[in-house]
Length: 258
Image (tube, rainbow, N blue to C red; front, side):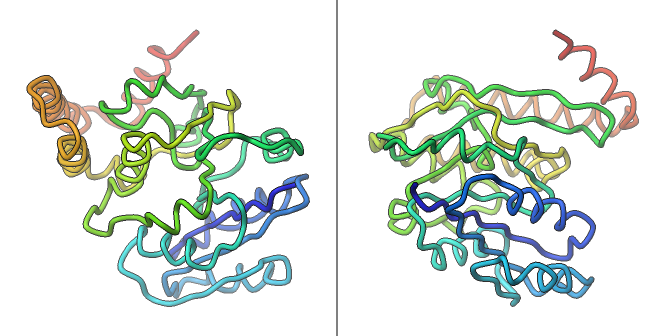
C-alpha cells in the first residue's frame, strides 16, 4: 500500500476547513500522511486544526506568499509516494476513494487523475468528467483536487510562484509536454465548490494559460484560440454583472441536465 500524502492549505476559512479534514480522516485507506498548511489565520481556523492534530502528520501556521507558496510548503513536508491537494472547502466524494484508486497493485503512471463533482452555491451539483488529454492545451481537463502525482516529481518541479492562478496548470502542462505518463482512473474523486480564485479572476486566468501554452506551442491556432477565449471571457463577466446569481445558476442547471 503506497503512502498517500494529502495536503490541505487554508487561510481564514474556519467555516469550511472541518468538512475537508473529516473527509480526509474518514478515508478507509490506511496509509495516509495528512499535512495542513495554514497561512497564519486569525479567525479560529488554527483551533480547528488543533482539534485534530493527533491525527495530522504535520501542520504549520505562518504567513505565506499565496496559495501556491503554501502548496509548495506542503510538497516540502510530504514524504509519501503520492501527493494530492485537497484544500479547505474541498472534499473526497466517498470514504473509499483512495482504497479504490490504490487497491494494492502497482500503478504504472506518474500522474493519476479522475473526475470531479461541482457544487453550485449549495443549490445543485453535477459531475464533470475529465476530458481527453489532447485538449489540455485549451485549459484544465481535470481539477487538481482529482489528481495524484508522484511526490518525487512534485519535489523536482514545485509550483511556479510567478503564476497567481495557473501554477497548477503549468505543472500539469509541463508534465504532459515532457512525456510523463498519465492514467485516468475513471472515477469521481473530489467535490469542489464554485467561486474559487480562478473564477473570480477570469481574465488573469486566461492570460496565464495563454502564456503557459505558448511556451511550448507558440502557433497561430493556439494564439487564435486564446484570443477568442479572451473575448468570450469578457462577455461572461458582462453577463454575470447583469444577471443575478440565481438566474445564472438556473441557466447552468438547464444546460447540464442529462
